[in-house]
Amino acid sequence: MADEYKENPLENTNDLDKIYHTLNERASKLYKFVSLFQDYYTIPRDYDNSGRQMNMVEIHTITAIEENPGISITKLAEEQRRTKGAVSQIVAKLETKELIYKQRSEESAKHIGLYATEEGTKLSKAHKQFDIRQLQKTMKYLLRDCSEEELISFYKVIEHYNTLLEKGNQKQKEKNIEKDKNMIEKK
Image (tube, rainbow, N blue to C red; front, side, top):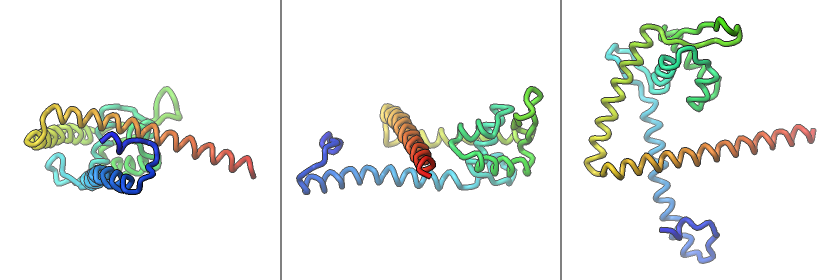
């Protein structure tokens, strides 16, 4: 397995193809997982048995607001790894549904905080109960074929993979900023 992870280019085409196909088979499993999870994330659900359908982005936004009263759109966007524009659209939708509200800060006229309404708080609590049940079912299912140690290892790998991706994304952002600066200076 170690040969597949060497950084040096391979001269032997047979080895190159073999290693590529081995790594690609593994990577394809990850790509499939990401794609399936993204689909799962967008499916509307009724978290509180009210008939109200919400996707995970909306419900997690309500819960983030409920748990962090007064949070700003900027901070929420940072935490959710979304643009301020995307979060503003979600917030507007939730505000229209009367699940959250905005309030200007008494300390700073510039700061507008987000707060869950009573209905939003109830929905957030129902969401937490829903997630607990779903996560318990998922763990029970996974433990049929995986050991507890394997699951712990899986989450450890995911944690490190997230760190790797965050660093890579940050480097790419920095490169893009530098590229933009250079383009401006050339004009």
